[in-house]
Length: 168
Image (cartoon, rainbow, N blue to C red):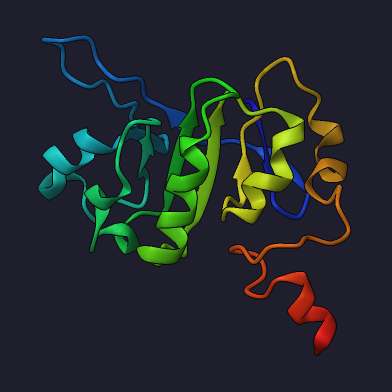
């Protein structure tokens, strides 16, 4: 099983399987007795069947809008956001919107082309678990999650900018 890194730097086995989007004309193949992440639009299409299932989560592609889950985020045990390429920053916005606007409190995971130098920035946007790209060293993840001792801006991990924190 691949590893997943938690926001505190611990490494654990990843029990969740990311189910790819089926080819046109085919149905989705969800493995039995295994927690699975399915595309968000397919979860919504089968909402009556999937809602309330603690072994079914969703994944967003970078072009998906988090508004799709408005009012339904509390029903999901895990939401993953796919970063198809490291230069595609739309996943950061999806993470912040899920946490701040839609008040998602469950596990928010970054998947796809996730690199070590992105981890602290993803953490600041609300992600609390990370599935690194397979060629990256998970043992270095804890150091990368807290590379900067102070941050200037407010984000999901601190609601005040540095100048306000220093003043108080």
